[in-house]
Image (cartoon, rainbow, N blue to C red; front, side, top):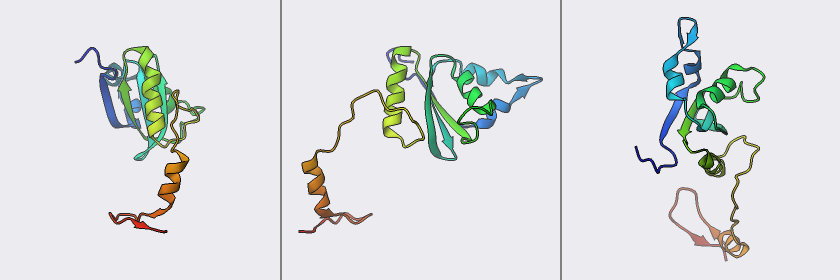
Length: 142
């Protein structure tokens, strides 16, 4: 594994039910072991991103809380999750900001980076064009 990598591992679309797996009367240690590191996670409602969060502690603990505490604001709204392991805490906020900026979710947080807006002159040029959906044809309105 590349030591200079910001994100070293990821999990894609695991079901929420992994937090219900048991060995005897304890939670399954395999899942805890795999999600022991800090990082950023995405909670999904079916296949749609619902919430993006971060933790400097174990990802398992944070996502487990979302899955098992009825008072958690996201408890009823997700059934799958993905994670990105970010070993260095100084990069966790960066990765979370990138995901929030690029993904439509229910997050109230705003990315911790400057947003660039489309210049008005370019927006005016675009409004002058008609671009049919699914077509390569562009026609001038003027």
